Image (cartoon, rainbow, N blue to C red):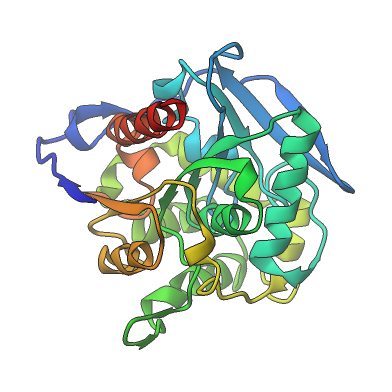
Length: 313
């Protein structure tokens, strides 16, 4: 399945994004903690704790200062009729920040399976951006019993395409991180410039609150230590052979103007999987869930409702 949406209405001034969407966040929920093996993970819980069906676990991107709240705090309220878990990935936010010495995506996947164990969750939906999506795809391939459905946005689980290695644009995330933490070090303006260049299409609509959240988190001592690290983040891993083993229904929700990889890349990924489709959204870049949260949540809701209905049939 491949669909495309476009919304060319001019944004309303002040705190809005594409199509006039409001980009303000609710109050931050109370922090919660889970023990995933030897690692302590931080997460926030929103929505309806008594909702039927699998909860949604949100896995954020890998940019400097990203957390579950920074990446999904604007979008999650539009899905509040479900149980929602906004997780800080290992090495991010308030979660533990150990060195990872195994394959990067499989190492993360094992931690998030243990996270579900600690919360007593058998199966969950995963809604993911960038780094988090590759982690979830590895989990779905290695522990298919734990993943009910997947929405993956802007992720690069395979470092090559049908015509060879993904070189220039695919490496921009690493270059952006090195630039942000290098030189004179992190600053509020460098964070805004990073988000504007790599993550948003309508960069004049980036809320100052988002920049501040990301910048302040990027100054965490553990994140500063890992800011310029490569080996400490895990060994490079190619999920080419894993994709055919991802049997959970999967939707790649992609930005037409994604600055890392265009929509031809998720089409190629989906073609290698048994139950995957692609939804392309216009006038957004790498962070669809922040730039057009209501529209993104609508895509997620429609897809996961169908997954649940088919599972119950």
